[in-house]
Image (tube, rainbow, N blue to C red; front, side):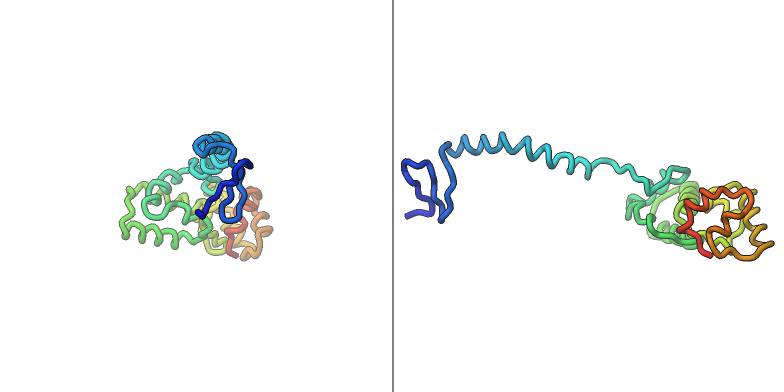
Length: 186
């Protein structure tokens, strides 16, 4: 006896102890199964697959000068995503970019400058008690005059010890401070 036996008259096939209804010839059954399952599977899996292949709308990369250069220069080796979650000082970002260039990353001098400024503005640690006005202006994305007011306030009153201390600086937008609070080093 073979592995599949037919029980005549019942329309059932027996295969190693399993009962499978088979009232339709196999070729028609396959076509019917395909016709039924294709729309179901397509409606379920196509949105998932298309969501995975769609261009990213990435809120992790704020708009601004340098973003395009970051994506252009970094995409060949590792992608710009490696910058997200890495908080470094200005000097550390500068060294990282120097290392990238030494390892073959291609960019113009203007692009490297834009990338460093973009990383400073969005992904740099802010050494609030050590940074000068220029660095504070770049990392906080504030006017130079406001950054000078921070340095003056710090020189007159002493080191900042918390975000709330920094918010007391006259003319400094508290919302900008709050948005960057995870990047401050006191």
